[in-house]
Length: 127
View 1 (cartoon, rainbow, N blue to C red):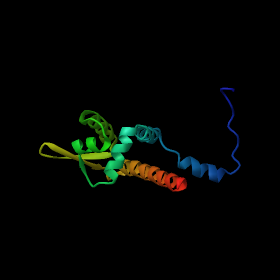
View 2 (cartoon, rainbow, N blue to C red):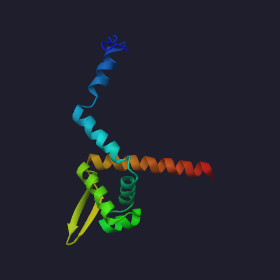
View 3 (tube, helix red, strand yellow):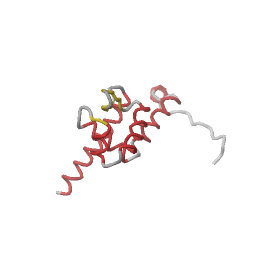
View 4 (tube, rainbow, N blue to C red):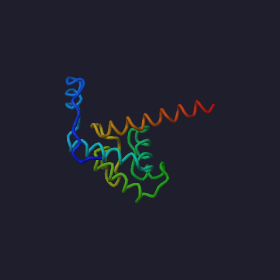
């Protein structure tokens, strides 16, 4: 392939302009990539699934639900917290986690819900 390939003229300039206006900025692309990568880890997906079915869970209880050590669970919670997907609220020595109400938490929760729908359709197809 040539490095200086020419860009073809659009067939529908208005549609192209509309699509170009919807393209994410580099910062938005980076955030999308980070969110996608968060969903590429089974432990983090399990944490999100657990939190989506409960109002809040303590970090130690999350470890029990997902079958991981407290230390491993804590490390994954830190990644999700840094992304803004979960929030923790301290009450004495206990930190209770919930899905973040902001867009990052919503994006991840919606992706997990779609995976749950996929799992449900796979289960019903197998019956």
